[in-house]
Length: 581
Image (cartoon, rainbow, N blue to C red; front, side):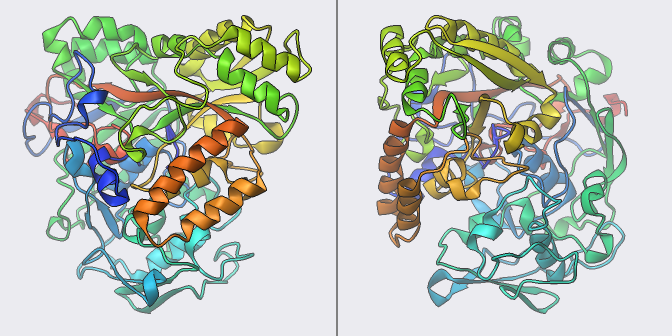
């Protein structure tokens, strides 16, 4: 998925991924394979017991949301927030820790969909009694409309599975001019039928994405819809001052009898934005006053690890689930210097990955990545990559490749990172200087980071990027990151490297057409090595997501499908009377 890890961008439970894809590994329901566990970090556990209904949950954040519009929401933690609180999708992931959280269940739909025509046609029936925040009924036509609006050129940034999978979408630019897709039919208010260009056995997983939530045409506001999505979930927006504060209150027309996943424990949810990461950590570690009823949105700062792990009271309030994502250094292959294969390959050896591990919180929270596909999609293994497993790189090999690429004395280059990744960029700057590569760093606010690097005409030479599979299939990873046909002038979320290779694209199409999932899985793994040889990006880290909660929080756990972010469907308070709005 994206994104993103933002991208960084759904992560998967390894056991579910491997069951679907035919791989085999020893997994438990308590947080994945033993190979990935690190001392001092608990996984697969629920913090604080079962919440009580009521009170105000506070979320402390260093950033605004990139997009809350479901047609544009493809940043993994934000997808969690939006689809657990504000809108519902045709299917969704269970609210459970560990591997069980990667199982899907019906949400708006009565079941996981019925396929016909060899998997080219999928039919979903909506549950009766579904309502929006104003009490009007949710209709199948509204799901169709949101899928269609995801094609609009102005509404960039969201999942593009509809563009990839639906039949007859060539040249389609959305419904704002009155044109609709024939490949989505709604014979009545509760039935929606998707006609696909090829069989997609995993389409029940595809419709967990925000693209497949309802937006009534009467509520269309174009790019302004980001500020006030119309709620089909348990909460609605009371107020939203971008970059400052978002306040959610109950949607009284949400019926829990139609929803087996969301518990909606708090009365209010207040997201305070624009705070400094270290300040957030210190406040939640102290857990004083209203901060006892707070959780943090973004990862705990690496410098705070030493404040938490030695303190049992704070450590028990730390969640550090695997993200299931791969963190990468994307090399802009569309222009010099990284249109040169030798210079790209030199970067594979020039980067000191151990410094990236240190800058990201140390080995308790990070593994060094040796390939693009995360272990959840490769059998859980950390096999040697094409360029080996050296933690610090290989200066001699890097210099040799620089010379072969015509740059024996190195070169000047640029990188754009979010403000939270500045330390990592500085570590990269230092490691590249060993081989004469002079790196200039530009930082931008996290809320606009992917919009910035996704502007292909003005993209930097390098960027910190990453990808998380949206569901357990290599088809949700390599094509999004390395298929040149997915590159967009604006909102280029996946293929940040702007990598174009006809042979790779041809092989992707061949794998996508394979009817056997296990064979396709092995083919994706083999293609990973082929792409590594062309070096459009340097795999850096397989990370955990460290998040703290206050001591009045209950029901908190990092969810496998949301890259380790808290599952906002079931989080709440031990004692609602102690919270303050």
